[in-house]
Picture 1 (cartoon, rainbow over the protein chains, first blue to last red):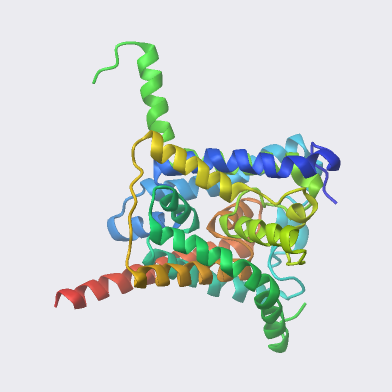
Picture 2: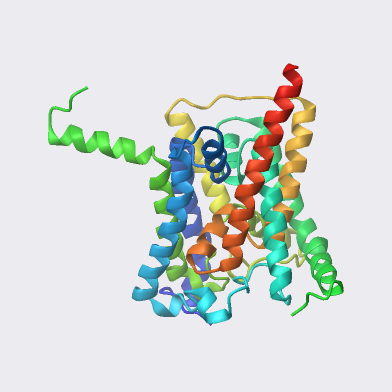
Length: 174
Length: 177
């Protein structure tokens, strides 16, 4: 069990507060910069523009540098940095449906990845861009967020179980 | 405009920096790591500092659980905390303030068909993102954390974007013809 800087009793109150502040800062800067993961790849493919893509690439690089920095400062909070070295190459960080084998995880990354890219580029932006457009007054983007909200309990109650059953019936369990 | 003092130069560069996507990328990366360093005692998973899909799931399911007494699945960090993660609420507030302050707020309506397509799109994107275990942002955080599966997701997403762009170009050509 990983241990952070704040003890458990304080952290349970800090979670909503810290994530809210972080979100406000990210939302403000995202509205200013037009940050978008999907838009970056699209603009590079269409026009060889790198401005928006640089945001997503910087995110990957600085995520590594940030985790490296805090792994040095607070090693107990970064228990499994660098993940692939501690868990094996094709096992994902917890958060994906659990109890499957490497082949299943590769399938469950590649197929949804392709479809998310395809759908989001048709709708003009990744989830964060849709949230920013909603705040700018775009009603269509608000329906995107509504769709995400309605899908949340559906995923938890049905789809996550179905995916695990499907993968196990294909012989791809752990 | 030629800056006439050091103060002006600093201000102009700060303005350009704030408007550059790479600056925000760096901010999210560092703050997501800081957030994990501070909060991980409340519960996992790791590399979870910022994600639009997972944090929407946590918010909706967490609030539903509190109000309706249900037990929909959500990440341990949101389950253990007094309230689930609030990043998505924050993004909406931050972007709204920015749009208002900079006079870029304008109501844009669409047709009923648009609303239906965007609703379906959002529904599918959340399901697909959760099947993988994160939206494009958490995929980037996980890649930085050393998760090769997340890197595969990003590569596949880039290919999906290319396929979608080609599809749109073809459709536009057909409509012109």
